[in-house]
Amino acid sequence: MDRIRAYIKPSQSSEERKLVQKIDFFILTFCCLSYFCNYLDRSNLTNAYVSGMSEDLGFKGNQLTQINTIFTCGYIVGQIPSNLALYYIRPRIFFPSMMTVWAALTMITSSAHKPEHIMAIRFFQGIAESTTFVGTHYILGSWYTAEELGKRSGIFTASGLAGTMFGGFIQSGIQKSLHHKAGLTGWRWLFIIDGLITIPVALYGFLLFPNTPSTTTAPYLSAAERALAVSRVPEVKKRAPLSLAFVKRVLSSFYLYAFVILWIIAGETESFSSNSLLALYMKAHPTKKYTIAQLNNYPTGVPAVGIVSTLFWATLTDILGGKRYLVGYWIGITGIVTSALILALFESTETVFAAYYWAGSVYACQATFFAWANDALRYEEDMLRAVVVAAMNMGSNVFNAWWSIVFYSADFAPRFTRGMWAMIGCSIALAVWTTVLLFWTVRVERKQAVRGDDSSTSGIAERGLRRDDSIADKDEIVTDRV
Image (cartoon, rainbow, N blue to C red; front, side):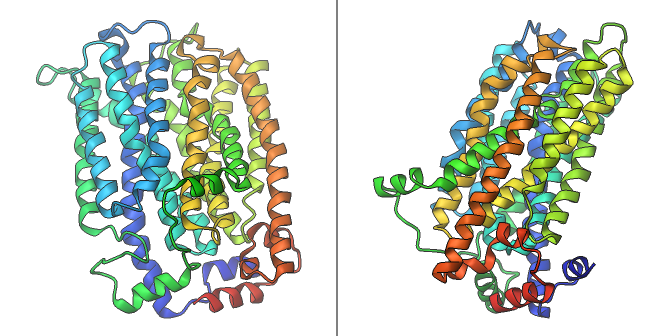
């Protein structure tokens, strides 16, 4: 209870509370709306597919899966360059510009006349959309303390899941009200409206996004608040130039491999949800026929569970002093049980629905694992943190590019037997690697403590394992930072 009370009412000065409220409003609102639009577009490709696009454009075999793979290839290409670009282009300019590009490409999708057109569009859309997820996690790690980061990462991730959830409802509404209006089918109107929704958010970012603490010129932050923002987080080490020496430092850092492997495995446990398996299962059901409204609305339960799970675990791991690793064990259990249920009880539609809904809880790993990386790299070179965060998502998407074709191809519906066994394997691997990474980070932090390194005061995994850390000690650390 002491931890919960300290989390709800942290020992902050009135000035710091006011600052946190401001950056919550201006950073989180833009980032969450951006990610909402980002995921709205991604999920609506499947919504359009089950709402008439597959028949109108003559989709065959696994062409939908191929389009998703091509999008992923573009997404991979943009990961690290987009995060490095933040050192040369102000985030206030870079993020909204990329939003404008993907909004335009989304609206262009409405004019496609065959699957190959969408394949070309989605590659470039993947490049533009790659800026949002990893870039935001870098920005959040630049503004928030370790005690604040998990919940903010959770809120950000939940906004993307909300985009997935509302996408189905939006398609259902468009199908009823705009289908065949102005000579356009409902799925074409879906892409037009998606693009139009994104433009005002981009304009908001151009005007009010505050960049980073050391570069902000936001008019709503006073000089004293800017200084406080810089003092709240570890001093950023001088940016190293892009050089062969820097590349060698990155490639020799175990942080890179540790967290990239973590997110590769965790990313594939999300495949039940990210590949819209429930919607494809319903469309290909051997005995039941679902209406377009049902095909769009019933799968929204999956991201709804993801939102609740993400906010729960992100907040809980903050309260528990940064025990982000707990989510790895939860996902391991979830993946094994839900896959086994689908394999063993496939004839029971209720069981399959329940298993897919439960599997939506694995989305919690997005917020917590990227917060874990930001925690661990908080006192390392800032550009290294940017590269590691980007490389995590890039590594995961390198696997996503072929994983969905091998295990979750649209023509494998409704059973996805191969994918169920892949999920079980990934879940076991995630539990094992989480344990390896946990003990490695604890070992590093203990070595830092022996050397008298100041960074030992922020040892998230170490504090998570120590039973004798008191709330008073935690409050003292926060006060010292301010």
